[in-house]
Length: 144
Image 1 (cartoon, one colour):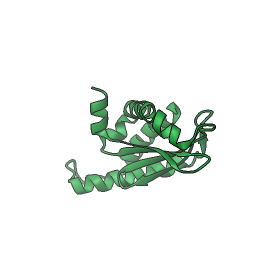
Image 2 (tube, one colour):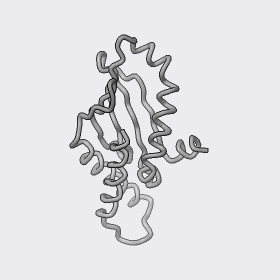
Image 3 (tube, helix red, strand yellow):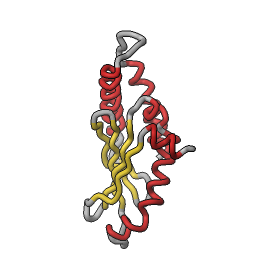
Image 4 (cartoon, helix red, strand yellow):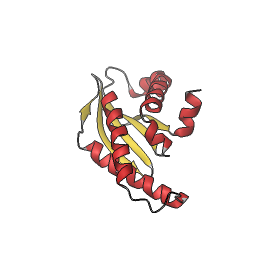
C-alpha cells in the first residue's frame, strides 16, 4: 500500500511538470482542466500494475479518474462474514484507517485539489461495502 502511495506522489510531480502552463497565474477554469488531466494520466499510469494484491484479504482491482478525483476500487474477501455484518461493524475502523493513510501519503494530490475516493466491494457478492471520499478539507479536519 505504501508503494502505491509513493508511486502516486512521484507520478503527480512528473505529470504536473509535463502539463504546459501559459502563465504563472492560472484561472480556476484552467486549474481544474489541468487537474483533470493530471488525474487522468495518473490513473492510466497506476492502472498498468493492476490488479495488485494489497494483503491477504484485499486486492486493488482498478484506478480511474472521475473529473478531478482519483477513484481506487478494491475487492475484499470478507468470508465468512456477511456484507451487512462488515458494513455495520467495520465501517468506522476502515474509514479512520483509510482517511489517515490517504491524508499522510497523498498530500501532493490533495494539495492540488485532486480528491481521492476509495471504494471497497465484496469479492463474493460484488456489492459495495464502503466508499470513502477524501479531499483537502477532510484531511485538514482529520489531522487537527
